[in-house]
Length: 79
Image (cartoon, rainbow, N blue to C red; front, side, top):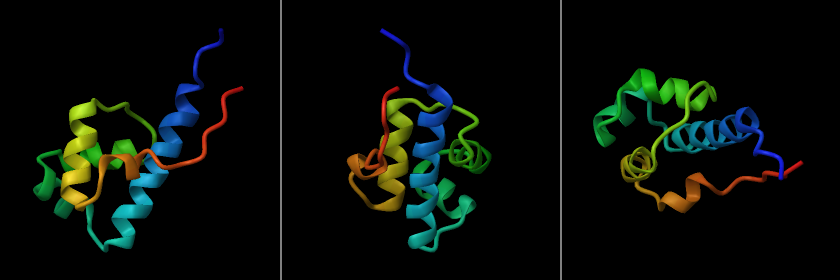
């Protein structure tokens, strides 16, 4: 079994986070204050540069006032 294409997965997640954050008109710094995640880390997550822990996913969802599953609601095809 081949491994999941990590970079593509991180980019897809980051794009979803960015879209939701912008739809809610929230800046990196505002989201950071709402969810106890450093604003530079949010930027790196959105750009697909770093992975995140499950706890961080839940913190981001709390800050955006959404269900955590909404951050995972994107198309992803295994190759």
